[in-house]
Amino acid sequence: MGGAGLSDTELDELASFLEVGLVPPPNPNVQGDAEGIARGAELFEERCASCHVDGGSDGLLHDVGTGTDEEEERG
Image 1 (tube, rainbow, N blue to C red):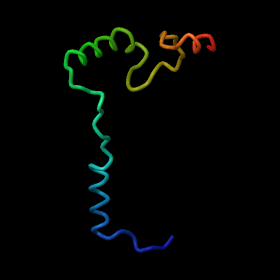
Image 2: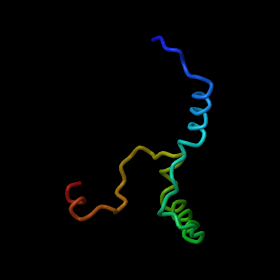
Image 3: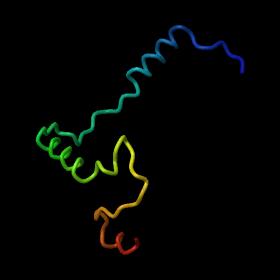
Image 4: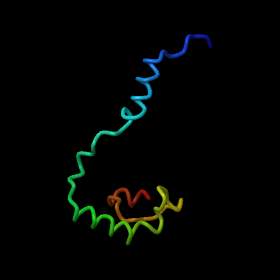
């Protein structure tokens, strides 16, 4: 492939970007409502955690009742 590689400055800049440049921006929908966050965690544990654990799911399709009437008719 050739090329001279990256300079020390470029390597430092790349390392800096990888450390802080990939951090997502703050979520504007999170208000820091401790009570709401606690309630959400409780609801997740009661209704979701049995299938959605460790960042995944059980791989099955479940009707959780969130579709519109039209979506429900289409299946």
